[in-house]
Length: 235
Image (cartoon, rainbow, N blue to C red; front, side, top):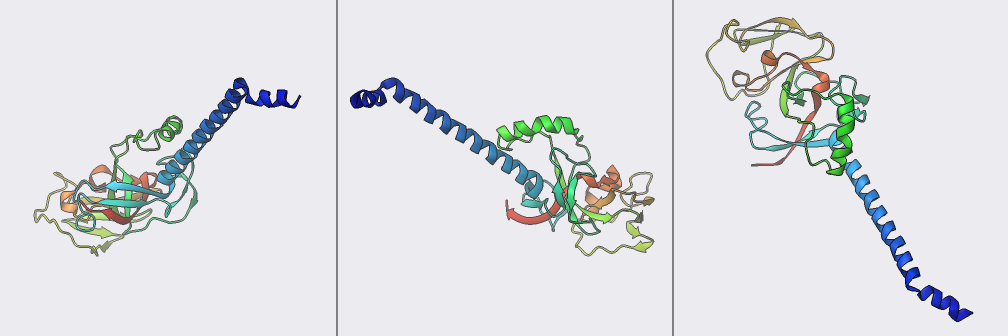
């Protein structure tokens, strides 16, 4: 009787059965591990930090072309899942935007996807470990110059905020001595506007040679994804 039981355990069918069980268990663990790592990577990118390469000198010398920076997302708050670039996208908000903040924002030319499309894109990003930019995102750094309820105007290159002359505390590296009339460009002359709720006025450090709120209007706070953090690679 004992020998029959022993032979049963040595049977090829039994051996193959337990081998298949172990293989399936291993595959299951691999899939689960892959899924968890993907979720963590997407969460990290969406809520904590994001790398960005600088492609222009609009913020030079504060931010230089060709350098790579880390965008600090968690400083603004904890974002809702599947919600991108909306004014109410945060579950918990940590930081209120203020004048002088250097922020990373979604370029105004990029159309914002609705939540349903983001819900479809999210699992695809998970399967690709978040490497592919399926949301067609293009980001840029700008400096906040005016926030909600501020008044701002530009007269012959001089910027006035709340009826006071604004003097920048950063170096303007590229300058153009010409003064353009408002009929030609809003660069040097702009009528007074009052910043509405959930909007900000952003500007480039080298404002004579860059595009910002003077040209593409005010920016929704929902388009701001984070605060400038550290430089991590130099070209």
